[in-house]
Image (cartoon, rainbow, N blue to C red; front, side):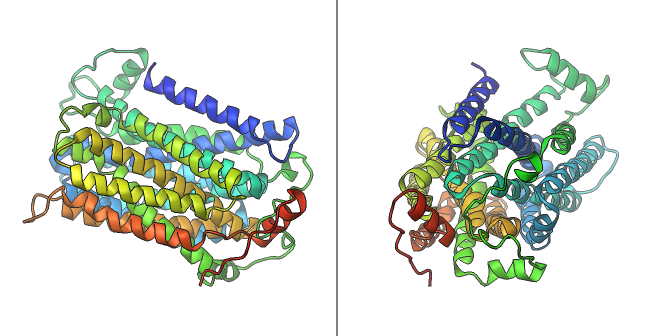
Length: 499
């Protein structure tokens, strides 16, 4: 079975689990209409990842034109802008809604990717003689600004359609969408890059002929690396149209009765919050700051693995384990789905929708795997690759639980985008740290710097994430505690302080 076929099978399993898992006994049409809502929203989000991680694909294709430290600085500039943009975009999406937010994300990111494609084309065809660092950092930062609308928009719509007791499942779906996006970025992105080389690829298909016809003209003297930016841009514009057509902001907009999701906004939906009020719900909440701390460590771990493993494998060939780098996108997709579902379903099934316990467990496992990577980096390529994939599985689960679920639970529907956005922004503060640090730690231009520092750098962040996650082990929104006590016949969880 092809890699795309495997991903399609995974998607079919996810859809089956979605319809099978129905703890609140929703009607068939509600489940179907909610699916029609989240599927295009989710696919748009997945392809936003293709328009984000394509920078890694381009880096390998550009070779010496984009050395490690330049790639780290470009990626760091984008992730830093992504993190800060939530101060504006989170409250904005809470006011305008997730539907408008996801359309802004798709169209804006498409325009920025077109800009990156044009610059790459001009430089590679010797029409413009400038270093890539400055202009690519600017355009990538613009891309990431629009990308930042994506996560908050999907979570904003989710918060209106999913009860707290169902959000572990949605966290799993959220992790799956991230995994699909990484597959699209690395496998589809690499396939596009391979289709548009001067050398005719093996196994020519009608699709590769079309792509080559568009990007590789007669008399071309350079690989059409710019195609990895143009293709996701076109796909994103197509999904933006589907979003405009199909998405409904709330169940009421689709003709259903009001759904009380029993999150932190339960009983407060009539209240109006200013931007200042929304920001105070994050910065004056010890619990929300702890979630942000977990996500900062997750950002270091997530991009520390996804951005750098293929670059590591290209610069230090992993003899005998080449299959991992060759199928990196597919493997990240499969392991990410496993991690997302493990975290989400464990939370809902075994811990009454508490997000802290599975997050703590997953962080502890990341500590072990990062240590294994550090000890085997130069001796056991398969172990290194497998450890990296297991870290990715765990970090996808943690990210889905905290940014995709817990922030919405404790922020409530009225402040979902602000809270989840600022918590998600901490992921990209962590990504900024690792992008710059790993870029310089692995640069061959500096004495004593080498790839051995890569996994060593990750270990303390995994330890810190585990410590913070243990601190929020018993936390649940008060409305959720009341719902569990009234509807499930279970005692309220003992409150735990976060001080």
